[in-house]
Length: 485
Image (cartoon, rainbow, N blue to C red; front, side):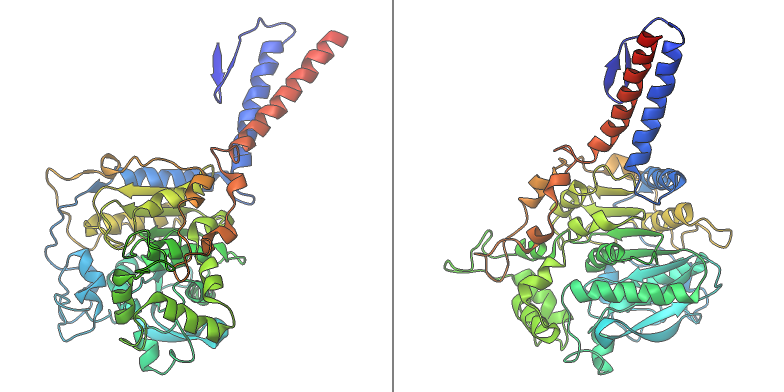
């Protein structure tokens, strides 16, 4: 017996070339099935490059006990050397401008090659950024910040690292963050929405960067910026981006906020109702004017009034797990099981809607915390490897700008991954939370659900089956011709 694509077929004697024809037809069917799984317009070598990139990244040594040491060479042009710091600092003290030029206690100064740019996004929103265009023909990368007070300053080390490796780089804010508010470009004329409008800002920034260069463009996003990266990629009908990689993005914003509910599984119409203290604390610090807002529903309600919609409808535009089905370029998502900010179930939710797509993958590791995983060396090499494989160029390199920590914990990432239970699309949709502002209403994410296409329920696998159907038809016709002959 021979097993081909999970089907067993009996060997037959070679009668008038039947065995040879059978082999050719079955091989052709296998090839056809593979091609059917590839999104339309995507070359097979892109799939190979994506697979190679993921394999190389998983083979890299990752050390959850990483110890930063020495200076970060991405800032070698700075007057004062910038020290390497724990990645977690990037969304705490390391994202706040201060007076320490070494970057040990606050954000270091941007390398001299970067300059400030302000562009216009949708609704006339003004967003600020830092840009380094070294060569208009080199690959470019847009770096997308998370839900952080000082926006693009929180990703300064990632932008500088990419620029040092030869990429044209831009790190733009999303609307109504600190720098925009200070320049009277944010509140009250523009308001945050937790993803809907911000994803439009990401796409606007990507399109601006694309106009400055002639090479391919990638995008890397962290935390809410990871969610907004996925949402932006799904709206990229003009093929601005060639590849995306994300770290710790919510799979569904409403479900993410509800995961912070107190009491757990609360109902807004049943005493004591619902509060979201962890989310509230972040909103108080990040949403401008700082300290004015202290709960997500007020933010959404005000934004809905400004943009002529409802708070519920805003959240229906913030389900990355569903949006990714519209993405046609390679997308790699990372999560950590010990994430204290984004519920790790997001990994399973994202995975449920990408199964069967050879250009999408979600990896969950055991220890990494949030967005900027513990091992800054691995973080850097993983990002550089990904873009090097998918946007190859002699102008770029794969050289970390920080130290590597070796030791007993220093093993391949693949040995430190979580073997999470894979969900069907319908199973994942069942985990979406009710509307955070009125739990008597259904999950906003269900508006964009596509359960009929789930892999376990017979979706993408039927593409492979279609190839085998072609083979079966051809074999049947072959037998008929032999009978007639």
